[in-house]
Image (cartoon, rainbow, N blue to C red):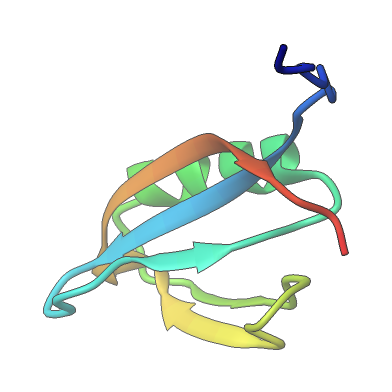
Length: 83
């Protein structure tokens, strides 16, 4: 007989940024991803260019881009294994 272990699966949210002229999206993790998502969404609506500098947690330590180069924005929830 096989015993099954029901371990609760943890999830985290990532802000995924699509930039014009870039082949791959940028995946960033933050302490408060909903706030960053809302801020970037507002900057996408603005016609004036703004220099944006973010310090996400994870593999990317600092990321800088111009707001008019944003092509799309996604807030994604994903399962992960905490080490």
